[in-house]
Image (cartoon, rainbow, N blue to C red; front, side, top):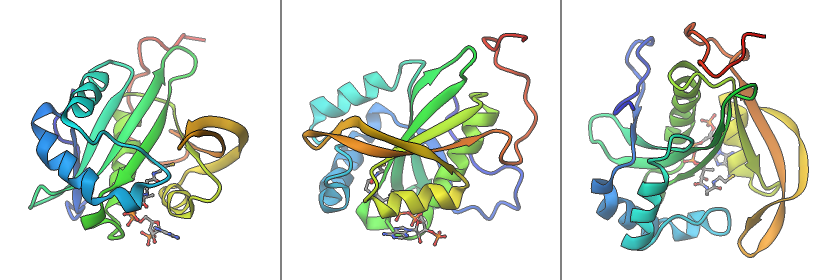
Amino acid sequence: MMDFFQDARSDGSGRVSLRHLAGRDQDEFLGLVGASAELHRPWVSLPSTPEQFQDYVRRYARPDEESLLVCVRGSGEIAGVINVNSIIRGRFQSGSVTYAAFAPSAGKGYMREGLALVVRYAFEQLRLHRLEAQIQPGNYASIELVRRVGFRSEGYSPELLYIDGAWRDHERWAITNTMIDVAPTPPHPTLPER
Ligand SMILES: CC(C)(COP(=O)(O)OP(=O)(O)OC[C@H]1O[C@@H](n2cnc3c(N)ncnc32)[C@H](O)[C@@H]1OP(=O)(O)O)[C@@H](O)C(=O)NCCC(=O)NCCS
């Protein structure tokens, strides 16, 4: 597991880096979740108590789930969290992204930079072929975020996910590793030869 991921191929001007969520982030994370309630409602629900946070850390220790913090380089401030969920190997090599900015640093382009890094991390380090984002049609900020990172609209699934007390319709956005310039990596060992 990587502790840090930043754009090693660029001129180093990227403003954020990624690191995995850890138990020691509890106090800062819970403080940021508390400060972001208005931004997150009704789209996402993040852990808001120490017990929920510890469950969350345990969940993301599993091999099919990763939780990455978007950190501002220099200060180390946590600008947001981006998770790669439901990683399926074999002929699929795909995962779903879920994400949230934290209010003190939202709207500054950090999530766009962070999601672009997660895409590179997923394709180059996790050796996935595809990342998907499921987004409610009214969540304009989220749709713009994935659009600007290069995801394409794949379609629409009625009643896809249970969010805020009801089954909600979602747009499906995705990006594959042939759509962007990624460093060549050997295929994941679970990918069949043909
Ligand atoms: C979606 C979310 C993560 C975006 O975070 P953010 O801090 O605004 O993201 P950024 O500042 O990196 O902006 C990303 C891009 O989206 C655009 N954007 C952001 N909010 C927008 C809005 N309301 N309408 C249109 N465009 C918007 C920005 O202009 C930016 O594009 P640019 O860099 O080309 O200017 C944030 O709004 C959030 O946490 N929402 C609640 C949780 C959520 O909805 N999660 C996703 C569930 S599917």
